[in-house]
Image (cartoon, helix red, strand yellow):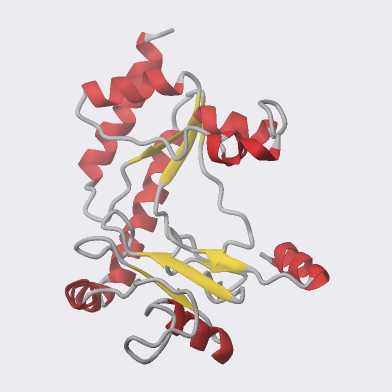
Length: 233
């Protein structure tokens, strides 16, 4: 985040954090979503803190931005039927807020179990000689919340299919980098322009890491991955 903040300051640009998958995570002891001018969080049910349906929040410590966001979420104004701006209807409904209020008290416990599961995966996989690359926590990541446990691996798509055949769910986040998406074709990027992004998109696979995952289940996941590479030699 520091280089991005410096770049924003240099060019007079506001830095908005997409912290959708990082609630509770820290960068140099600062919580994600509270570092830039604004932080955007998703409470989609699959997130570390998920609602009963779609929900989200934008955070800021700037009073002027807070005032602007409050207007934008309510049809562009504070008073019903009077619109100062062209806004949207983006209020979180009461049911979702009630669910989140209850679940928020459990978030730190769930995060700890995700961290423990990640440590166990690293220990189990490190004991094996497999063509996979484990996630690495950088020194500036002072608190990792493991929304995903993502490995990079050879023959990713085949491994994903094999895991599914053995009853293990996995997911690819994300199969196509942004610069190759059709919606950004007008920017003129082509395959090969961002080789690191493209390589990771071809190799990344996220394994189960949710808080309720048992040690037995993790042992099974690791054994299935090991068996795939042993059988396919």
